[in-house]
Image 1 (cartoon, rainbow, N blue to C red):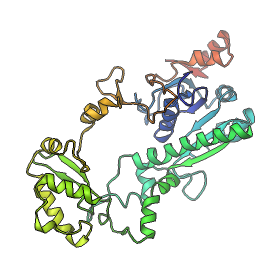
Image 2 (image 1 turned 45 degrees about the horizontal axis):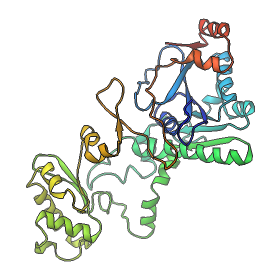
Image 3 (image 1 turned 90 degrees about the vertical axis):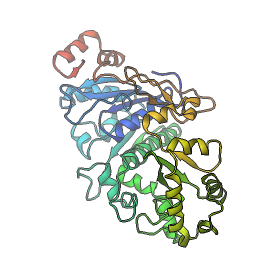
Image 4 (image 1 turned 180 degrees about the horizontal axis):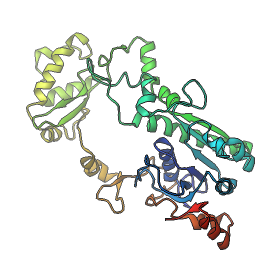
Length: 386
């Protein structure tokens, strides 16, 4: 158990899953919670790919949840935990005997965090899906992309992580705060579908004010606006432009040598001027390489930045100065550092990801199982170790 971070002293049982569930558990572990991941005993699922960053910061016990005694092992873990995180389809945890009723009966103070794609009820509750499916029914996917082109899936950042997992982590912490006052646990029902809807709050608000068109690629933030877009440079790489405010826009034009261009006179927010502005910016940025433009805009408050790849991002001077990335054991690729940061609480350096079942014996011993009982559980396949 870690003794640093704002969640130090909080214990979490994570029933292993994919996507937003593991990311939620990572966020809790990054903040100092002691997280035990319950992996499956036996061969890994064909859908499971070990992830050395997403799975950092926890210990693992491998359990056969289909055996009644495996369920009992998990309930023993739950008995002294503060939080449980599960990301099964609706009804699966109940069929395993590990639903909210069973777990809260064992530990009335437990915060039971549930992560699904569509929610616990509704006509799609039992349907399969992935990030791209969930965000497609919220309007978010339709809004992302250029005019006249197909919508562009934004990795799985909007639905799984920015929506579902972050919402579950926030809900869990809220429930922990409430439990501290009431002494009672409760279920946190988070899902990607609902949470993605909340991420669209700004866009819905702009539409309500008549400031957002239903046409993709026709608005301020969706590449419809020429001063909020990405431009290709002479070397085929790109710069990002976000000169929404007048002063940033004018500064950008000065660096580009376009401040005296008569085509660009008048307000840059006049949509009738946007085609000429886009043409001028496209031609200007194409005259130099990305790094030449990065140097030209360095130290200039103009909201123009180079588009970096993942390796370049980790090596950028600002990232280095803030220690925004940390070494990842056994890999040439770094991992993102813990965020956010606190004025008093020191967040832990994440421990490396572990193999399924790597701490099975240790975790069982902490639950009160003696050596003979652990050996018997291993021999009967109720639990496993590497």
